[in-house]
Length: 454
Image (cartoon, rainbow, N blue to C red; front, side, top):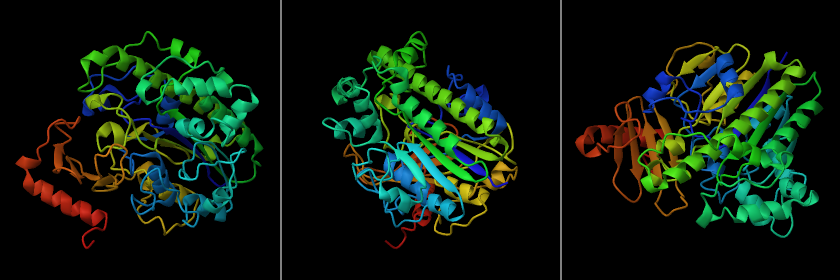
């Protein structure tokens, strides 16, 4: 029986907002585990392996998802920012699976054609077939849906809302969460079934039910949460309104109440995603396929959530680039924690490996299968993440991380070096004290990205 794949892909779930034990939290510089409610994710962690040091290839939606699809580090995928589409001529692990007999499906926010602001009213455009999908319901992200759908829908979620007479409710709500009001945490008036992640989850359940049981399948579920803005339903808001969270690291004391409210909504979105994960897992189990299905939970990037008085992503700080990663399935070590230096695009090679296929084009993707099945060998000596085109004019950057140090090379100011063992929050730049380490790691970064002779 061939392996199936259920790929659970929230947007902006930062890597330290996980139900880790106290020891892991301490290593991350946290006083105690966060008050999260993620029972289905905890079950996946018990059934599989959790990678505590995974990072994104690039902390921005389109570049990260392009690296994942292609198995290439940034910028080799050709998607340098959200202003680019992944070329339909680019071979992806989706197309490799399809070539090897898989039904390749997806629901939610793909962000593989971010520049092309048209998703099809049924969530299908021809480029998705070229990228390797058999069937899909691809919807716009939170901001893209409302910015393109003010007059008429350009994606299936906004079409659904227009058809239900709810478009104006959603447009008005999102306008109240515009940039100048970005910390608005009031609940939306949308009913539960019309909230985007619940709509995506139900699309996923229905799609699973349509698969023939004698055919291998891959399905990716791209949730829109917990990406900003901090919109939640009334039920979700009520469940968290009395919960106190630790304040952001080096945050603005004047924003204590606002920061806690934002974190309540962020936790509520995660809990709601977890609930939908449970519904999807129940459907796989009811099909009798849980034993031969690899389940992957990962995010494209994180969010600063007020750390260092910053929100959003796109920067090399840990809140932005550190991501959660849990994998369970046949042969995978159960209840295991791994501190391997994993990068997001490694999942392309991992999936192709479990499918019994090959993808030589995924030159930067290293299969995690040996680690998942108990091999204790070193996966990578270093991790790399980068972004050339940022939103805030702060210039481009690239970072390299090993077991002890993190070096950040900026285009607009001096290099920064952190001892991440002694300083997990990256507060103290020690580049001036260790020019030898800076030089060594910079040379290694150039080698990893093939930049020596550029």
